[in-house]
Amino acid sequence: MRKLTALWALLPLYAGAQTGTVTAFDKPVAAVKDQVIAWRRQIHQHPELSNREFKTAALVAEQLKSFGLEVQTGVGKTGVVAILKGGKPGPVIALRADMDALPVFERPDIPFKSTDSAEYLGQKVPVMHACGHDSHIAILLGTAKVLAQMKAQVPGTVKFIFQPAEEGTPGTEEGGAPLMIKEGVMDNPKVEAIFGLHINSQTPIGQVKYKSGATMASSDWFTIKVKGKQTHGSQPWNGIDPIAVSAQIIEGLQNIVSRQMELTKAPVVITVGKIHSGLRPNIIPEETIMEGTIRTLDSRMQAQVHERIKLTAAKIAEASGATAETSIDTKTKVTFNDPALVQRMLPSIEAAAGKANVTAADWTTGAEDFSFYGDKAPAFFFFLGGMPLNQDPAKAAPHHTPDFYIDDSRLDVGVKIFCQLVFDYAKTK
Image (cartoon, rainbow, N blue to C red; front, side):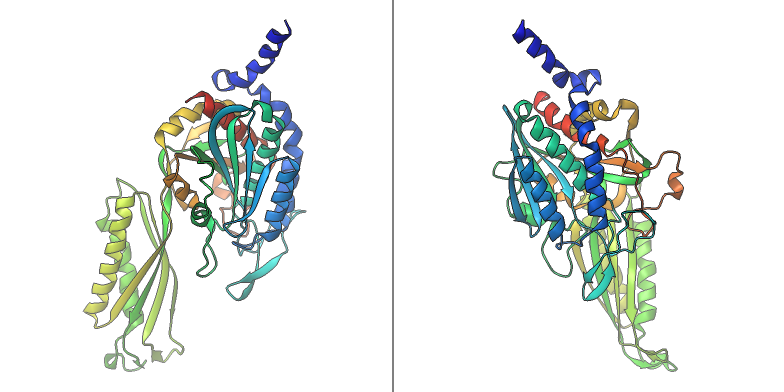
């Protein structure tokens, strides 16, 4: 009778994805919820820029060690990796959170508002968690605590990856997902599948959005240097105006999008975000430098866009007697959700969040270096709502802006989902 009672007590744990109940996680997740919010607010108040997440990493490592996990620090400069070896046989899966903040001034007047500043490329800048990475850290810490408490029942091994520099490294430094992968985060033991989430300020709290296949865009940064011939501003015919040539190139770049790419297949964005030329208003300068970003959601289209940008810039410059040199640096690849993994694990997300709260979404031209993990193992990246209920999504401040704000009252949904994925992945093999 005791054996039968013990087996019956464990039944809800393994029935979660089938019945829609998550009773095995309700109590431990509820118990950690306030701590998750507290972690998020503490980290939010003291943000750190990419590859400079020293205090954040120390806080994360301290907490993970207190849970009894194996912890490795200094991975990919400031990254932290923890390993939980479950009490039951099973696969190795990874859960990832990013840790870095942005050089943005925080405007919302909240009790845990960031007033910190730091040096960025030689300048003193304000620092803010303007993309929600503080929430990701807190959710993954909460997940680690819950699963550590349930260690005897956890199937297989779980890697908790706390990654620095998702927003891009300063200057020419290495960092982010590529460096963590280079240093073996997906090996020893080898990861079979990886999951990640991102908070979204324009999706209501408690709701989840996902997309199978291409989900987030690749991100390339480009520089175009146009060289002309300097002359007096009153005598443009004696020189070659690189500013006028650059204006034609900018228009030509948009013609690549609107006239040369098959937009019914996947969207393409080319943005010139920075242009610099000249010192005086009465001198036509010798050189103009443009910098911008390219976003694509198809790898073949990405390669085509690169070639067309180089050709367009060179030929437009040549027509005016100038020259144009283009360099392109790929920051991230297309974030691709493995369709088989999505189909297999979607019921688990629905079980944890409630089926009515989980919807398929369109792709986004935002980018994520989570994409690189997909080269090493099947990956599934989804979005968790952080917008207050009853707010108009059109009026919610987007990410990377001074007014960015999230409601952290339902971060427990993220913890539940991660826990459900850990238990259900082993069962659905």
